[in-house]
Image 1 (cartoon, helix red, strand yellow):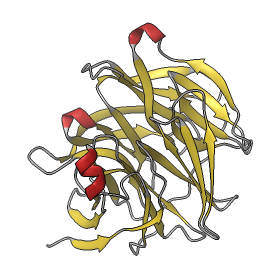
Image 2 (tube, helix red, strand yellow):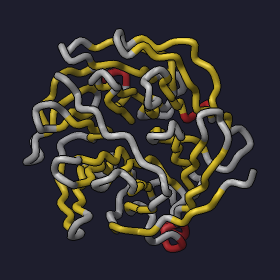
Image 3 (cartoon, rainbow, N blue to C red):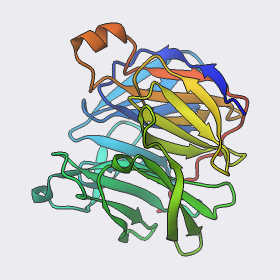
Length: 293
């Protein structure tokens, strides 16, 4: 079966070097995302096109909603809270500065735990770890070693967890126990070996479809729960990093992109790289679960 093709359109020319981590905040009606390399947090209001930027003292790499009304964050080499005025309050560092790593992608699981992984600042393989932050503040390493941690994301019934170590060129799937936070029986869901682009951020929609941003792949792919390529969203930027469903009915798909790997010629050819893109793919997203801590 031939995958359907959609075209994403620019909604915000954010100029992000490494746009990542889009999150729909339903109560505020905004999309929040980060620029890791420029240490910025962007807030976009699609109702009027409003755009605010918080300048941070460290790279914020992923965000989640919370039951307190602020945001839980992966930042620097640990976890933190970000208040609505842009103040970052560190919680815990998960790795020492001497290790030369930083946090990367993350998400809140169905039971309200926040997960985020690390990656090497120097491109060293196997330096990263996927961590789980429980509501009581305990930090548990779950998957190690990894090189470039992306995800995780969970199936609508909470029984499967999808995870990406970008260097492996795979999206893996694990069995997940929402009651305990344990994940196991890791196996390959989609293998991108030989394909254009490498898997980056991953999310899941209300039908169980798995959406994968493609680094250097000019696209976002949707896979059915059995691993079949179902939809290709073409993006006018080489590096589509991650997507998030938003809007009142969660039918708007927002896509963050990066321009960091592009040389000057590449930036001229892709002037909107680093922007925020949008498409309505005809499926509904899952509402974001808040961190319970």
